[in-house]
Length: 358
Figure 1 (cartoon, rainbow, N blue to C red):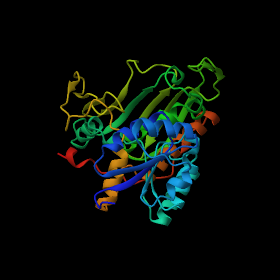
Figure 2: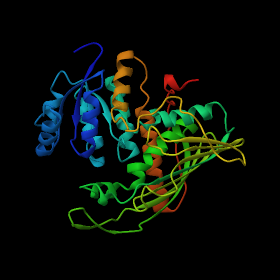
Figure 3: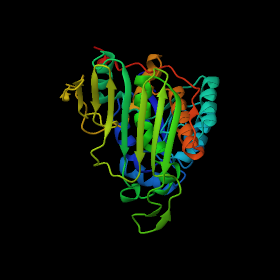
Figure 4: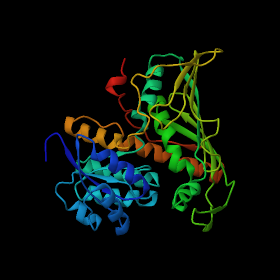
């Protein structure tokens, strides 16, 4: 293995794995060694389409000495167990979000990685995109003054209209699946959360898969959370699996003493960024670097590999991911028990991208 590359193995060959494989195959610092899935047919299909080696079982992939980093793309409910298995096998891990489905499990994974001297990273990686970095640079430059309020909207639509297996998404709910994107961005920029008050409502319980199979949703498909941060800023985050992503309520707005900043999307790397002085109309801001029109799904894994090779902290830290899990757990507790919930964990904020520091 070259000193300028690390071997990567992918665990989980669902829909999103196609994007990861495509991008990782062209990543200069990555040697994509192989893939595996509990459903052998899925792995074989992806392997054939992308010309990747297929390992029959997770244990086989982890026994491969060329695999130094395991990329966990399994379903939400399997994240914790698969990550634990990979760490115990001596592999660095990059996991899709969320890190785990309870804060206690997330903390245990952070502790296990530290105990073994291994890197543990977790999506979302979208903070590293050009649009989010442009917005963050404007905040650091004090363009809107002290931020006291932020609005984030995640109208993600009805999963069953496009995904062949929507049920696991509805089991965890919109906040756990897609609310994590603005949560990661907002806490990175505004600091850790300290208290959550939330309300959840099930708007459409009866759903039908693309194949015509009816099923019933029991987790709220619309959630609003008020998140008080350590910096004093208040975040209002709305997530739903009902309203579609063509809603005019989108992105993240930061409101400060001097004005407002608008990040048009919390996922897209080429999303517009606009700034307005207080009481004035929004004006477009040139990006610090032009973002690609197609999201590069390898971003988080590549940055982790680069950090390992350069012996520096990686940006999608496990501590930050665990803090986000604590927020998500608090949201569920708050709307279930109808009370505010305190947040106790913290994390070291990630560094801005070098090219975004002006």
